[in-house]
Image (tube, rainbow, N blue to C red; front, side, top):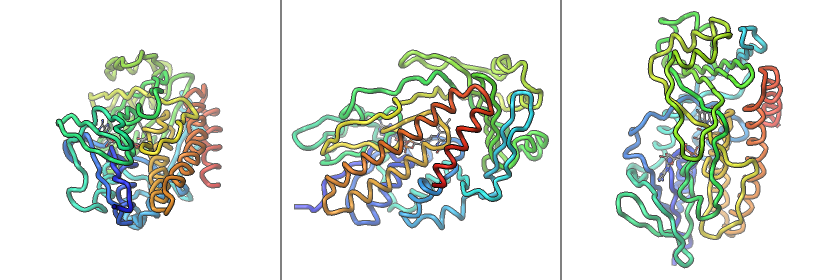
Amino acid sequence: MSLYPRIAIVGAGPAGLLLACRLHQAGIPFDLFDADAAADARAQGGMLDLHAATGQAALRSAGLFERFQQVARYEDQGMRVLDAQGQVLLDDDGQDGDRPEIDRGHLRDLLLAALPPGKVRWGHVLQRAALEGRSVALHFGNGTCEHADLVVGADGAWSKVRPLLTAVRPQHAGITLYELSLRNVDVDHPDLAALVGRGTLVAKQGTLTLFAQRNADAHVRVYAALPQVLADGEAAPGQTRAGLLRHFTDWHPSLRRLIADADDAVRPWPIHALPVGHRWAHHHAVTLIGDAAHVMPPAGEGANLALRDAADLADALCSADWHTAVQAHEEAMFARAAVSAAAAQRILVSGSAEHMLETMRGQEGRDAG
Ligand SMILES: Cc1cc2nc3c(=O)[nH]c(=O)nc-3n(C[C@H](O)[C@H](O)[C@H](O)COP(=O)(O)OP(=O)(O)OC[C@H]3O[C@@H](n4cnc5c(N)ncnc54)[C@H](O)[C@@H]3O)c2cc1C
């Protein structure tokens, strides 16, 4: 009889891939399934800054920190906070910071390269997970069914593993981000490049926020956050640049140009969150990590927590009494996520740039500690 449970990881995002790397290094067998048809089936989205105690620590635990440093952008850690009239409240060039940026696609490539080729079983869309005695049956959209003694749901906000543990579903957080792109910004929009600086710009007034992030290849991603209430399952209404600008009429012209000068394509990101402090009763055959466990409004923590959850779960699975260790890991994860989720909610509802700045500084203080 095998020493190890049959482990199935569902989801090859940051959480699932980091866990897979660690189990592979420890010689613990597992299967890893993902809904995407292939690694490059869809664009991975914007950049992430990895924090010392969470994202960076997780990569170190997998021996991947040096490779991360080769692709991370230490020069793009700046943060500028403005009010809607363009007055600068914070201008930190990030030179002393320890939150290097990495594009999501580069992070995925780095983690995939640490696994044997073919280890991710792409094209496996989990439709339903069901308990069968002491094991779990995973039913995939391609008609296959796999069994496991321990299923790790790393399948993001809309986890199909989560219903085995709780009936709670993410709710719309009352806000939708609309993503726009400014490409070749240094040459085509030098004044906007200077406005954004080497990192992230945030401007806020009441319920409206503009974020602009410098990504690799002189690509600036802009997010316009609008208050919207969506019913469960309702799609976010489409927006055009002109439609978005109507919400920002009294904002400073330089900030409005972040929208006006962007490409035509506008991508909605309705923001959903599980309740702050979401948890479940421990189950011997199922656990969750990352967004599946604690999706929260984006405030720069989600991917960091996902990586840290995965590293801690790997530590637990490597221990002799892994059942007890997994339960202890879950308790620590619930506590850590609750603090970040509460801060993310406060940032979301902060009415002014000053208030948001105060909350962000509290978050950085915790990170450093
Ligand atoms: C607009 C926006 C900006 C953000 N910015 C930041 C930031 O700056 N910093 C930060 O730390 N976090 C940020 N986040 C949050 C971050 O993206 C998530 O917290 C992080 O990606 C969670 O990682 P994960 O591995 O848990 O889940 P995911 O990244 O969602 O990965 C889940 C994986 O599971 C797969 N999957 C999903 N459903 C199924 C299924 N049914 N069957 C099989 N596979 C499935 C998916 O294909 C995917 O590969 C942001 C989020 C948004 C929406």
